[in-house]
Amino acid sequence: MKKLARKWRRTRRDEDDDKFVLPTSEDVDSRPIDTQEQEEYVRYLEEAHAQQSLQWRSVFVVLLICFGAFLFYSIFQQFMSPWELRYHAYFMEDLKSWMVISAEWIAIMACSLSIVGLRDKKNDHRRWFWYSCVVGSALTIFWLYYLLRLPKFRWDAIWLPFGPLCGAGICLYVDHLLEESSEEVKKLRNYMYAYKAR
Image (cartoon, rainbow, N blue to C red; front, side, top):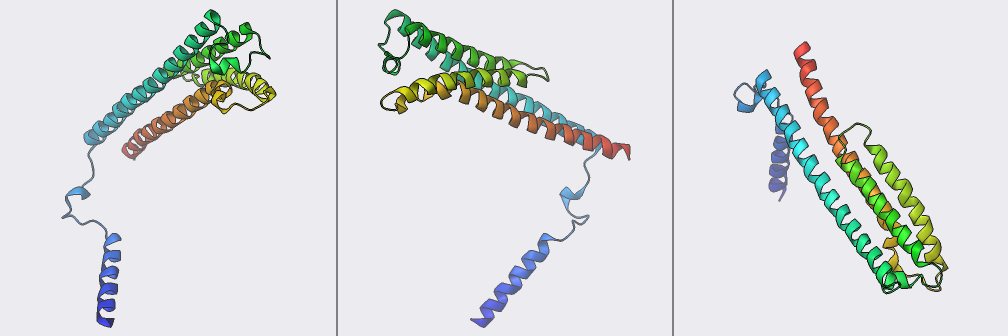
């Protein structure tokens, strides 16, 4: 048993030593990348980032459009046959029909502001997300006030106050992640140029 333990410790020590060995000239991957290869690799990363950014922004635009279409259907139902939808019927005694319709139009506006923020290519596109957050916060206060006035809190209508606000918050977070990865690619290009300047 002691022999086995010594042998195991020896192999573990050898494995740990291999982690800290410098590459030799015999290693194929140890050669430095020339300028052209560096440029191609950075360009490839920039193109991949642009493609993934467009893809993720499009996914969230489609989700917001679907949520906006659902809100439009909800407005149509409230207009044609008031209080027929269950999540509207909870507020029948406290709200007028036009107030529900107006609140949902404002929710569509919040979704539209987030969509504009996702599609805008300018540097100040984040302001659209913040505008959407402000509108979503106002809706959250409005709907929570009336939800808390109900005799029993209705969890199935919780999306009314938090839907637009969460949509804006998620879009802001996705935009932040995409900007962060874009900065990493720019940093890599700057390192390449700094190395050339030496």
